[in-house]
Image (cartoon, rainbow, N blue to C red):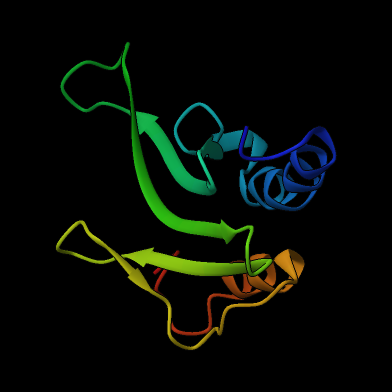
Length: 114
């Protein structure tokens, strides 16, 4: 198991809180933010109806927070146009998940929300 119950609650509070704040209630049917946990990573994505079939929803990941338990550090990644994850160099790895979530929220270089 990658994260314990306390870690999951903290991730939901910080990352889920960002997604809930950034999803406008009036547009939630058209665009909403969410996250999923995959191993040692938390992947943030935007979800919207598929243009070919409006009954289906399409997820587009835009940020990844990866935790390395041996070092206790979180690293922030962004998804470039080549659809690969690249380390987000303006933010150094840190043990403070809240600091990296704040970087995503502020998005000073337009890497996450344009």
